[in-house]
Amino acid sequence: MKASWLNQELKRIWPFVDKAASLLLKTLLEPILEQYKPSVFTSLKFQKFTLGTVAPQFGGVRVVASNIGEIVLEVAIQWDGNPSIILAVEPVMGITLPVQVKDVAFTGTFRLMFKPFINEVPGFGAVVYSLQEIEKFDLKLKIVGGDVTSFPGLEGVIEGTIRAAVEDSMLWPARNIIPIVPGDYRDLELRVMGILEVKVVQAKDLKNKDIIGKSDPFARVFIRRISNRVKKTKTINNDIDPIWNEHFKLEVEDLATQKLTIEVLDDEGLQAAQLIGSAQIDLKNLEPEAFEDIWAPLYKASKKHQSLATTRGEVHLELIYHSLDDDVLLDASATNPNFASIPTASTPLTSVEKVITTKLNGLKQTPYKSLMREGAVIRGILQVTVIRGENLVASDFNQHCDPYVVLRMKKSDARKTTKVIPKNLNPEWNQHFDFMVEDAIHDMLLVDVFDHDTFVEKRLGKCAITLTRVLREGEHDAAVQLLGGQSGQIFLKLNWLPPAPPDLQYI
Image (cartoon, rainbow, N blue to C red; front, top):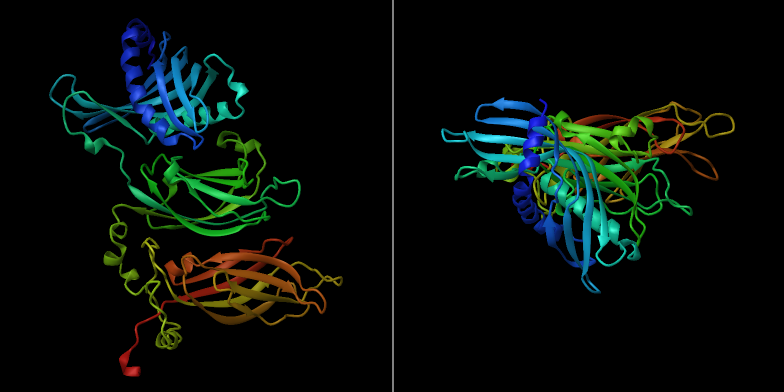
């Protein structure tokens, strides 16, 4: 719907709208600026805040939804403004700097929800607004009485803080409520609708950012870039194929529109970390309680330009989405029978348990549907059958190899080794091994395939397998591509046997 009449009307009343809108935005943004101010600042407040003499222009209005009790509109807005905004920036060491924000250029789409319907004028109780999309957001900074470029890094820090404050406070699903008629509108506030479990497993073939040696990568995962919601892995030094195997929980507020963002960065010590690449995953495709195993390509360019960009490696993630309707989020230990037999960290695995669990092979076990319980330590027996390899690298001069497999649990460093199969690129082992696992949520199975040689053992490839799927399903047939070699696949069979309470008639 065209909005030329609306633009004319807004231009006429803008001096009055400016006063109300400026006060509203100042009240909204100032505490958020304080929340996001960098550690180098002790204070970040507005000395002056007016939107200026130029009114925004509406590009169009469309009705998104008209449901029972609400109308939802999307309004395209363009604003090339001349605001008069002065920030009082107080560094940890130094005098307060007045920084002017000027020449703001903004293009985006606002979402307006009019709800609930009432029998009084104007017919609805409140307006809920948020930013649906930001297409353009440019601004200039100037130190009053000085040049912002005389303070290296200051411009970027302040601009980044302003952007984070605007996006986190106004970008959907964040929402702001303006009561029109007095009433209780707490049900309109943003609420957590579910929890996303994210396991950042590993990355491969990362673009090396260092001239000498290799990058020192770490990963950040978040749904909203709010400081206390951004999760960070440890740094793996000098490795472009890092293994993290770290587990995080993220709050989901709108499954239909939110995305999971993964950023892999090179740790530069005292300097700012360099972005290696990032990926985004739409949450709308996730089914509650379904296990998702994803290798996501990393790009430096924005998502809109990924088709034209080259990848900078891949990151391996495991995802499980839990709706708040699931009782497991309220009290896993009380409502989920799968947690009933999980010992705590202070409960040792007894010798009786060790004997009895060996008799459970072949019995169907109840899988763990969720790993949500805070501080849970899942113990048991991991049974691994190394079945075969396929298309291994011919590392010998006679175009053969003599492969064998080394299995290792990451946390305990327990190791098992298969026999050597001479002169075979497609070996079959069919060997069975048992591992006692003390913390299955945070442990993983590391697999290395070597070429046996009298003098030097050559690695043909490696892979890492988390225990998430076998915990949930009880058994798992794994066909995994080997990393670090030109080709090769390994086929394994995994079974999980949780410790069982002793049967007194056999003791």
